[in-house]
Length: 168
Image 1 (cartoon, rainbow, N blue to C red):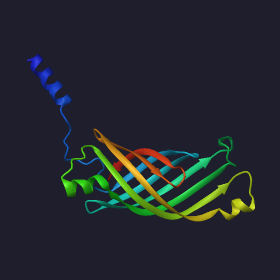
Image 2: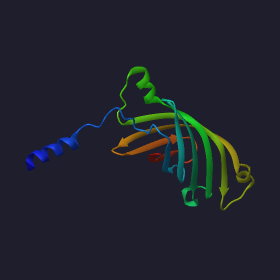
Image 3: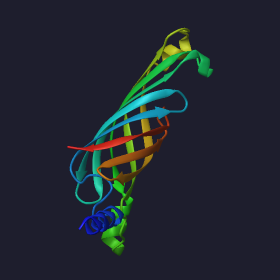
Image 4: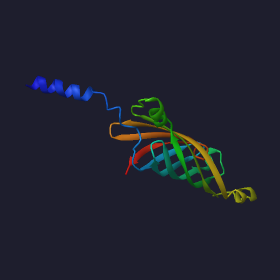
């Protein structure tokens, strides 16, 4: 009896995950992550899937580059609005592709950013204290059991971001 229970437990633990589940949630989700290059930062975002292959999203960025990073000691904060196309879902619709636990988004965000210099306030730093930015980005995500992790590469500092996608 105990041997049968052990074998059933081993089979259950080694079973493949269901491939019909997409990596990223199909409901609205929150994106929470840390960021790096050129400084260190945080990213918090919200995305609302729109149809099968599109998302509408917004993200708040914060990138801090201290003086010992070779910068003048600054904080860059931005708020971007935009959307993305879920590339692997397009392949699922067009070619019956099974993405498994992976997802890939290619998108674009734009919005205001604010630059704060802590040590040297020059005319150049004052001139760039406010600007509008445009950011193309690529986000890959992968489901690990009940968690979805992501890695995002974009043009707005911090350029490399990683964290969790949390379904609402």
